[in-house]
Length: 401
Image (cartoon, rainbow, N blue to C red):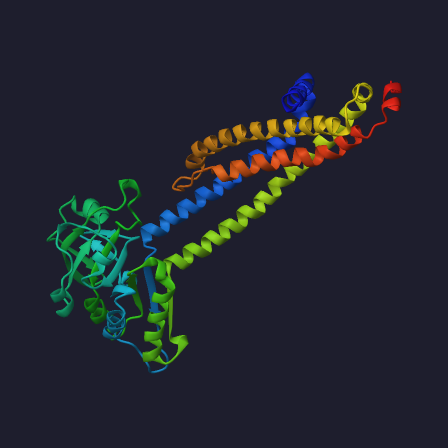
């Protein structure tokens, strides 16, 4: 009975191909839109996660500006980390020195570079690799030496790959290059402004040249990224014990930003998916309309079936299965179209938005949900016409012309 009902549904759908396609169009567009939008959301989420992973989602960024006459020293911040080794692996000052003058090598001036004062553990803390020479050392920090390490971009562009032992000038101060970092960006054309366009100096040297005895910016590495809230809490508690004010510092983690960004993306995707789902509703109304027309057209056929003994549930099942088949075919075509549009978008996006690494990645769950909703809409909106067909009086139906 089920197979026969389904066969009749396919036959009736196929006998009116154009009308069936136009009826399915709302379902096709709705399913396609849902798949593409959810796929775009997945791609944006993945891109955001990759970007923050490159920055380090296991990092705590600490800004300390003090409160009144109360300040905190670098040693005080080190002490907080040393008291909580189970949560904080290491900490380093990160003093921005970019605004202290142009960086010059010979007669050339280089802009868009990150220049920071850091300690000897900073490169390890940021997972940088020394490609040539050496990193900053404890004695460089202790003796306020005017040395530095540079990124691959500056080493390649300014020194032709032989920067170790050369000098560069920041403002009026000269620094000797003792090490070069390995490239983190594989494409040389994208290195300007990236992590490879950087210069790192001993933080004590930067503090001496800046004529300051305190530092405001630090970066810490958490032992366990999943305990970000605990690590943030102990750092804030340690800072409060010294400064006695919650307004004297601000601690945040990259994972917090990632979580907030993911929430915003998900909210936008939910709203867009809701808008796209209107097409499914319109498609459902179209199915109901066409099924009502079908019932009217086939009134005599229904009368003959009932006169031959067909029960109401058989007539009901026939029209519900037909509506569900129509919407299921629309859902299938929508899935195919969604994949085609997704693949096209993956080719077009890099051309219209260079540098944006976002791919449309449809997920199995979104496809299954969209297909299930399309079939459900067919059953829901097909039930009323099917019920009307099942309740027809056979005598009146046989008289219908």
